[in-house]
Image (cartoon, rainbow, N blue to C red; front, top):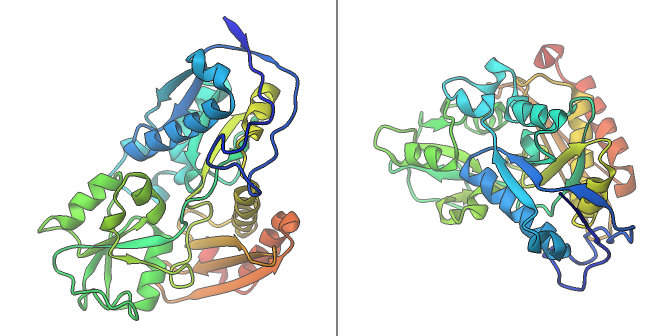
Length: 348
């Protein structure tokens, strides 16, 4: 079965990204693509929310697909989801959250895949491209507190943690920054989806605190769980944090055209800078790396990058700004600068 998919410019307010930040909708010829269009995703509550948000945007700008019930959701179990008792760095890195999904995409079992961009490897498999980035949610990290922590002092975000307290996280980026600020703290691994980690922190025998992306909490209606929202200067976020990315096969021109209608130009610029920074640093998954870009009021792009040791004993943070059209170069230049002035063993 096939159907024509006309998708010219949408009317104002057709979807939440309409406006100066969103890419202009291309006027392209109607094209034909076999139905159903199969959407690959992880099966966690957050991944499913992101996928359904993406589908809501697509069907708003292309009602014929909505009316034809053209989409099938395919939840795919990934290695990163199945293995919960080890750090990602010990089992192959964050690419394990997309490996099986991209195999299905390459084999033609699905037509596109929806990801948390921060979990997407910097170098994609051959024949797979990042075709679309959606409007960024808040990129900041949030501190989740258990029952043993004192009231929060906004002037001292970590002051609520007792001396020697255990913080649960599997992220070496978060670990390095919190230990740099509070060397007395202890870090233990905690993995699982958002709800699993919240349950562990709130249990009597759980860690005193944990760190989660504010974007995920907001999307799941759990923002009230964030006791402290950390300024990006105090806790540099992960590259791509808060952005949903959609991958397709490189030769699928029809889906490229369709997805261009919901592409967010600001998200594309900042994510390009952040992912270029990662590529230039070329660190292993054991290397704590942070990258956060934003557009300034004057239209310039400001990129902050961080490299550290996991134990917090070394931390180097720098920023660079320039034209958003030069996002890839800014990321590369900042990454090369950080790498040049960091101890070589950090990137082993």
